[in-house]
Image (cartoon, rainbow, N blue to C red; front, side, top):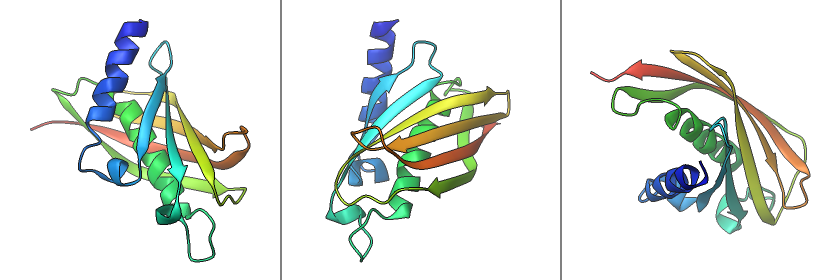
Length: 142
């Protein structure tokens, strides 16, 4: 199973090229044994700050949506289905200016057409920065 997870991580990271994930330097770093969790990291730099010098909430949500959508993608047959986010929400509970963010996404409900995912965004000290949840829709390709 470890080799399968390493292969999935390599594949996910290769898909970042020429995307927002590459721009934000989001990197996938871990997959749960049952492929029901996915972990990514993003460094905080001047490009993800708001004018007051704190992490921009939009960058946090982009990290959450990236890891949550990717978790759904690796849980469907990608030859048959597309995955689209239809709702995401975040509660930002702590501000941060520097360091690395870690997003841990967990698949809460894996239905045939809907996936519910929750994410904790934390810093390197494991302090929670934001709680996020999202709903993805699974649609057959035409």
